[in-house]
Length: 336
Image (cartoon, helix red, strand yellow):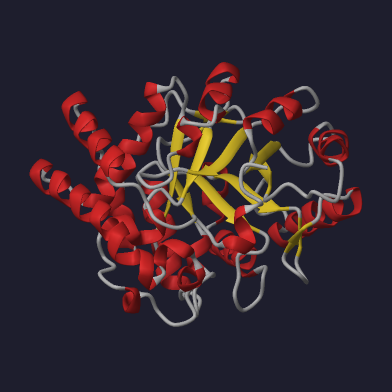
């Protein structure tokens, strides 16, 4: 059971771990509703009530994740008040490119609200990426004045921005949460100033892919283990020339987890939480899982001793990940 007493997103209590919904609809085939709903119920039952979705999280239809949430809350309307919901948008769905224009932002938020159909509150709207073709100040002002100030949404999240961009935003609009990839192989926020800015302004960090897109769990032994059509096949760290080297990190982490008597996933999630505390900021790992059993496993409370943290830090210094978090086409949009 993950605690909810002291953590808040946009003034609402959340668990120390959050639940990412992307994997239900961004795989070669969508997860059946019965299986997805069981996993979502398990997350809520164990206190992981911060749900993260995206307007474009679908391989069949970009909006499939929103349709899934609608169906879930149609079946379980009593769950709506328990969920703190963040949805990423600000993307042109036709070409899957950032659109931070006032028109694009209005279209995105209005569409999300339409698909939720009043069944859930949009607690946080998250701008997926900075749109270099539109002034960010105009984007932020549109969201603040037309949607936050009017009560249509709860607050704003920024995803994959630099410390400088975050500081610039704070002069214009309150930032409810920062979303960025954080894991044992994505430690940049502790090196580029973002953790310090979040600590200074008490901004919680939603750490997506805290399990390295499944790689850090140890379930993938070779590139061929990734299903055909899975997006991970297009990311640098999963390429055959990098896979084996990156597996060395997983094997080292597995040894520490085995010695402690926990799974690599449980250790990886605990590290993200405790690493944030070392920097004085709140980091909420947003893990994804399509099966109820995986959710239950990941939500088993785990803490690491100072000696274990030091042992992990030594591993991270000696084994650095090979390859970008995404690929050459997407890396320029990170920390913008």
